[in-house]
Length: 411
Image 1 (cartoon, rainbow, N blue to C red):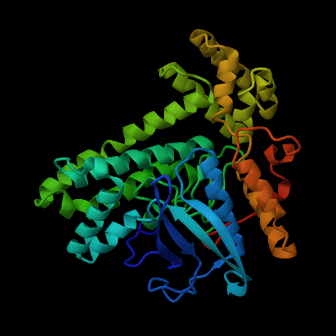
Image 2: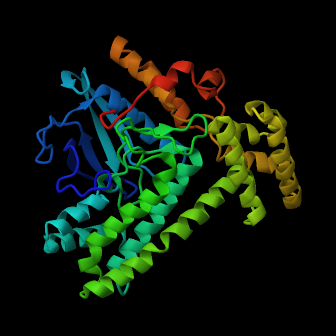
Image 3: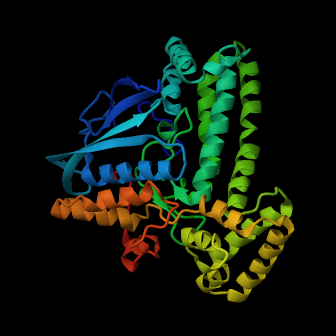
């Protein structure tokens, strides 16, 4: 499904699976080229990637790993002098991407909608045997796998929302069966808190806006469940009933995990309506005053700087009232301040891959063949919760020109 519509051959066909590697730790990794050239699925496209998009995925997949969010990984970039045409002529490049599996929701849809049910079963049995072995003895392994995917997807999107990450193109071929962040194109991290933030310039109707990601997660899971119906039960009616019951678990799972992560960002351990009201009301104030998402939560993570957070707000009296309520919650929990600050700093990053940081690295690479900024960003993003001396500007507010950056599906 692409922007809510079924497409028989979704994807631009840039991905070429090289094979599988087993490591000395007995883990398995698929190695996949992105941008290696035309495939059967490239839909008359060139199958290439440009340096700009390759740098963006290379940096962001490692940034997400540094944040502790499930993701594919990027092993390396291979540059090229070949010219590739997108909105303009750009330099080509290729990414070597790694994941335990690159199977997507759309992989199952392809066989379901083409009525290749034997192949659908083969794919499902392969995925079960490789990645869900704990479910093989279950009374209904396919339904149990769907439950696991619902759990991992709810967890993934809760993490996205907690760090202010917008994926930008949540088509079903970009949804991992393992609950990994997959395919980094027109993504964006929030600067000022804007729930309706649309990071994809091609998303004219805001289908994949930041605040719609949770509901799109459910839509995509519903597409997956539809494709698995022939394997869930011989009776179509019974299969639909079982799948629907599984899907109803998603929203409560997402909300519980998201609330847990947001309470942790404020150093609140207890699951109470009062504590949930704290982060919810704070987001309302942040939206009203366009407060920077990452900077505020990091500032709140230091007890000695907390009161200074009011300077980030226009309506400082409203923030002062919020802060008084927040501090009452901290008093009730009676947690050691040093322990709480350390816990908050461990989940509120100093650095995220803002678009202007990626853009600076891209321009240096494209214009001057200078790749040092890529290495510098990797150093920061692999350890995003630690302050790095001399890199204060990377944690600051974005420059004015950053608001003019546009990214699309070709980004």
